[in-house]
Length: 308
Image (cartoon, rainbow, N blue to C red; front, side):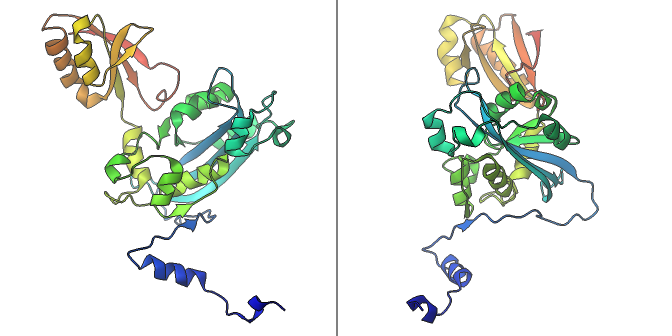
C-alpha cells in the first residue's frame, strides 16, 4: 500500500472548470481524438481534406517528403461547419538518403523509421476522389512538395489557413499553428503530420475571438476569390520608392515590379499606376490570374496583357 491509496481521487475536470472561472487563469486541454463534430442533418455536404508533410528540409530542389498525412472530412459550404471525419491516412516514406539531424530534431523521424517505407499513391488518389478543397496551414510550402511527389494534387483547388484567415484582425500575435491552438484553448503534440492535420481541423472549428465566426468559414470566403498579379512593365526607375511603399516586389527574372490584389481592387490599382508611375502615358501591363487551382503552386496562372 502506498500513501496515494489513502488519498481521495481528484476530479481534475472539476478543478479545471474552477480555474476557467477565475480571471487570473487560463486552462489548456490536450486535443481529444474525435471523428464527429456534428451529426449530418440531411443538407448537402462537401468533402475536404487537410494535409501536412514532414520533409528532410526546406528546399524543394534537394529535399523530400518523409511523412505525409491527410484527414478527409465533410463540411457545409456556407457555414464552414465540419460534420464527420471520413478517413485518415498517415504514411512514412524513405527519401533514399540520410535524414539530416537538424530535421530529425524538429519532427523526431529517424532513418530507421522510414527505411523501406513508401506512400501508397493509389490510396491517396482514392481518398481524394470527390474532394472539393485541399487545406494546409502553409500551402506555399506543402503544395509544391506534394505536387512534385503526387501529381494528383495539381488538379485540386487549394486553400491556406495560414494566409487566408485574418489572424491579425482576430487579435492573434502569431499565425503559427501551436500558438493559435494555445490561444483557442488546447495543445497537441506538434510536428508530426497527422497530429498537425487534426489540430488544424480543430482550430478551424473554433469561433474566432473577435468576429466569433468559424475559422473555416472565413477561409472558404477567401479560397474562391480570384487574385490578379499586376506587372508594372517598363516602370521608370525613379518610381521604385513609390512602388515599394505600395507593397510592390521586384521580380528579378522579369525585371519588373509586381503586386498581387483581389480582382475587385484591380481597376483602382491600374488607375494609380497610370497616374503616379506612368504619368498618364499610354502603356501596356502584364497580368497573371490566380485562383485556387494554381495559387500557392509553383505553376503560373493565366498570363495576359492589357493596354492602359
